[in-house]
Picture 1 (cartoon, one colour):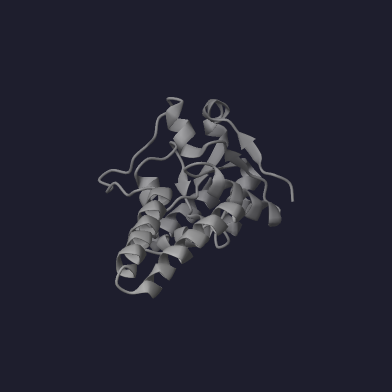
Picture 2 (cartoon, one colour):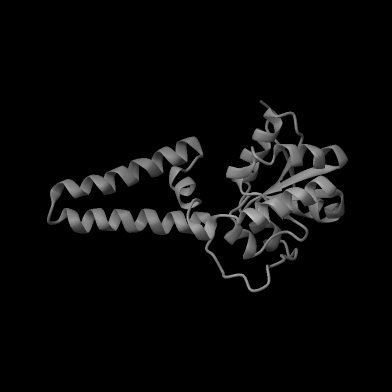
Length: 189
């Protein structure tokens, strides 16, 4: 499998109207700021969205976006395996905003932390809990060791089980009506 095509933020901004932009972050992350015109399809819903994405790709280019480019590259790989061409935004919304391009924010949306920040909070809290409880119950230190091992595994495989688990929390889940509306919009694009 080949690496996905990468598009720099300046290149994407110049051709933004030519793309169907798909933001693969969680709905909370999306609401806190996204590339103008982006549709939100969380990474764990990509397979269910393949028919709509295939229809959109038949009419124009797909640009996959996430916070840093990692999840969008994963999405591009899944799309490529299904025969759907797509590009990823280099550096994600972080690089987009850093280069001065605007972000749209959902009206009245609560500010949800990015997934990486949620993972750091959860992992750090679990390590501290393991160490604190481990002062009384020695076996509790295993929790800290397990989290540390999971972080190493995550870095080596460029995947994150904790992020997958956190993505299932209610504030990170799309409402089915929102996802249905997004898929319908892609069919009509």
